[in-house]
Length: 138
Image (cartoon, rainbow, N blue to C red):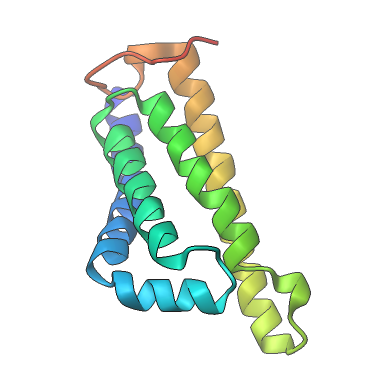
């Protein structure tokens, strides 16, 4: 069972680590897009969200306070869904559909991260070969 959870953690974390790399490697382009979407302080926001992605992704991947890492990913995903993918403001049907897909993806991933938080903080270090136990205990 531990190996299955570890593989799941790896697959889950790779998405966020790849995105973190993009936030750092293409920071200028991402900041321009974030500014276009109305995100306040887009340069700083892209840098901060990259840090959340990197810290949260590494935490879940390595099992170092993975419960906290899950919360960091939620702190990235929910605001991103609301600020970057407000499908309810779109008038073009195709754009609205694309934004709704991205919004739902982010909210779904936030739900998965919330479940990981609960699993890690309840089960602790027995979940998928972690390096540390949880920071929180529920």
